[in-house]
Image 1 (spheres, helix red, strand yellow):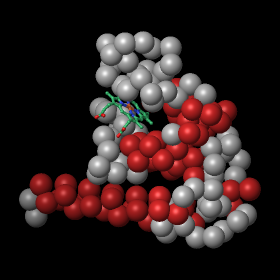
Image 2 (spheres, helix red, strand yellow; image 1 turned 135 degrees about the vertical axis):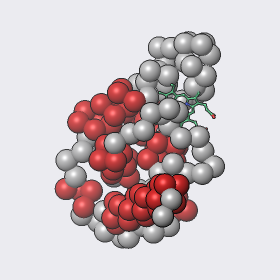
Image 3 (tube, helix red, strand yellow; image 1 turned 135 degrees about the horizontal axis):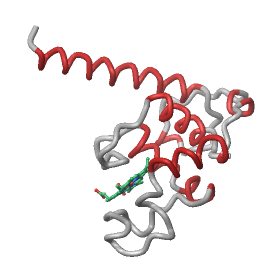
Length: 140
Ligand code: HEC
């Protein structure tokens, strides 16, 4: 088997395991988001109630480490923001919560119709999974 096809295989495996992880996470959420965004969502009520994830222990460190270098309300102008849109800032829990679907689409699920964020760095899967759970549980 050539190198390329091995690479493709392992990439495919990574995609599949990510999808499985996503389903697990979706099953743990409590229905605060529009159905069309989370079609596989199971009506489990209690899991997010038990979640210990918060802005302080999950949302803030993730966004401050990986995103506010470009997406900060304190950065003004295209150069300082490295091209990041003015409307997308992650300085507060409220800002992040309001952008839940877009954060999921760009940084957690890497949806094909969105740019992947951050643009050049690959985030650790466990960090993404945790951030995804926090967002899907309502970004408390
Ligand atoms: C190095 C700078 C940089 C970093 C770091 C960065 N972004 Fe971005 N972001 C951009 C740029 C540039 C765009 C506009 C790209 C485009 O529209 O193709 C953008 C666009 C976006 C958008 C809008 C996408 C859309 O389709 O409207 C979202 C949401 C976003 N980023 C989220 C994030 C998140 C979440 C992180 C951290 C995980 C992050 N970004 C990290 C530069 C950055």
